[in-house]
Image (cartoon, rainbow, N blue to C red; front, side):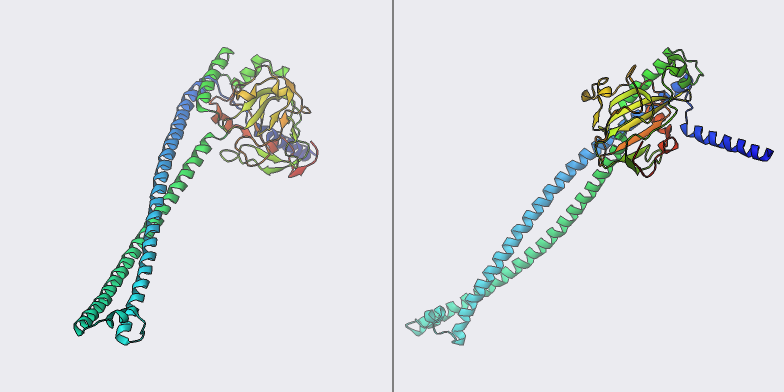
Length: 404
């Protein structure tokens, strides 16, 4: 009996551990905050420099590609001219060959009506006859010489054409390599920007966050999230005891993989503009655009005496309860003070395809802090990435469903 009780206790401890551990809610102290703000400000500047460097390289590559395209066009024009010369030379050879055949008919007496025969036999004296025969021979030799020169010209033009074709292939290959390099750099730049707020905004917010937590009177070695919750009276925020699916019916299109692959889950639906709901009761914390142009909503929840944040991205529009608190048309990107409390049955917007997206879907992220001001992420976005939580650890998300 005692063994059974012990087993139940152990099982209960394991369940509690598994339930709590995914939240990853340890925050930083003011002292650690200061150190990390300095550290990440430097890193953010380095990222900004990398983006600027990438953009400079892409501009230079585009310039080189344009130059190569000009060279390729010039080469194609030269090949076309040579081809025309070759065709004209072949035509002249055919004409001279026909003339030579007519001249040779004089010797073979094959064509009594031949112009050259008429010319030769039109002589009135032997001297005139010999003279005329000499002219015919000279014409024949001249035609042979012309044909030989034309053949040599064709050979020379063919060699030039072959050389130009090789040059064109080399230029095309070089252009293709530059295009691939351009795409690689652009993809690298996109990966630095996607989902990340503007670097200037990150630095500014990190510093204002530090001022904010100092202003709350947080102790130098006090957990800033605990301090914030204590000072702001987090108990006034309704407790989120249960979690719900964010849409009425849908399916998972991409799961959570964590840093740096995929920080949340992607959810699709047969209704591409289906209403989006909070996963739990919470307070509107942010609404606006991210750096990649996605329309997002962030809610703050009270979970076990701590703040937890849920982010809903790629929305097509905000619901009225959200749009009344933010002028998102102007690209608002600041956290919302004293936003409305929204229960889990009130829509916050509709599914969409805004920002870095390849089709209508909802990207759902859950974290133990937010990179927006007063969100408790000391190093702003970097700490946010580290503190993401697998939504499936809190919400029942099967492969597909038809209720919340």
